[in-house]
Image (cartoon, rainbow, N blue to C red):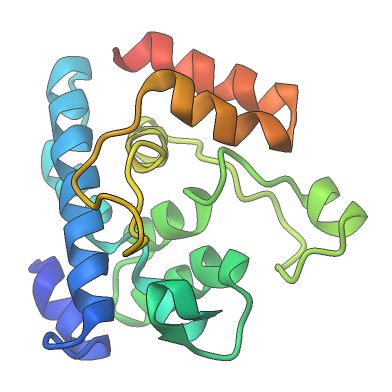
Length: 178
């Protein structure tokens, strides 16, 4: 499968959105594949899933990322899952859905009235965890350095605002992957 071919079905390759999405995804992919090699995960799947994990952003409304869809940005994971399932890649779709944040539980969705389907959206497989972990180190915002890899401390400071248990999950991944 060619992730770039799938992305070009949904994104104009001459657009700023495509540029930032692909640069971000390539950064995530490089880190994720390096991790996959160290922990003996499915490297080819990790490569593909890393490139496609944010495919759903096109359907969201986040002008900072050049996205002008109708859904809130937090929805991009499950929207990406739907898109990838339609393409015939349900396993890749689960990575897209489960990479958002560190983990979003059904209880959180209900309690916080998040605009998401009522189900757990937490990485389960090793490959899902690798992509979710690697994603936290790179921005896709044009007002930030696109190729800059955030430090562990920078990532932790972003995650802390969502709760100590999310930091705990991230730290478990950090021990596994670094």
